[in-house]
Length: 174
Image 1 (cartoon, helix red, strand yellow):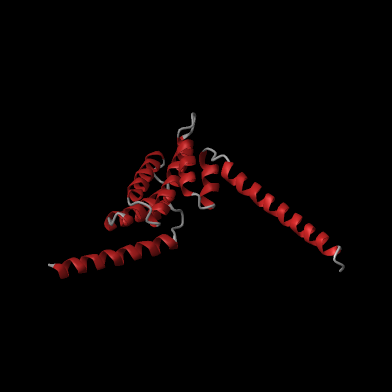
Image 2 (tube, helix red, strand yellow):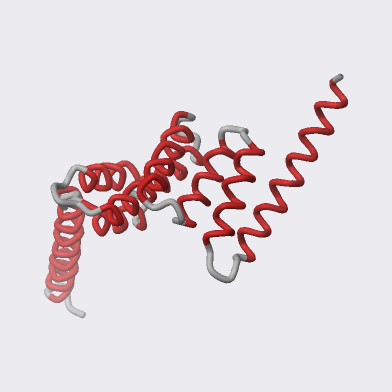
């Protein structure tokens, strides 16, 4: 390459790098101004991306939509409880355990045999250290699932072991 070629190559590379940076900036801006959206679909998309606060807002906005039916409302409450459980598990704030429980209770008022809501209710109660109540909620989830659930059965066994351990620790303190 001659000296004349080097500046041409450098300017081509510089131009390509500049175009690449501009494209990346456009993508970042697109994500920043992307509308949150309303409802379950928008909330689910945000949840999957790990954008939990925005997912919470989308589910909440969906609950405020006019003419929403009971089934969709129960799904929104249950999904919003999943966000609270995620936030509680990340240690964001302990009140998320209680908020998750309240959302599960609302979902179950609308759909009493909603297994996923019973399961998330159990997880909420577990987070609140109410293990016996968590066990009852998990048992309800199993009863609501057609054909049973090995995952739920394992979870119930885990809860039973923790309850036994808790009782043994209480006896040692006395």
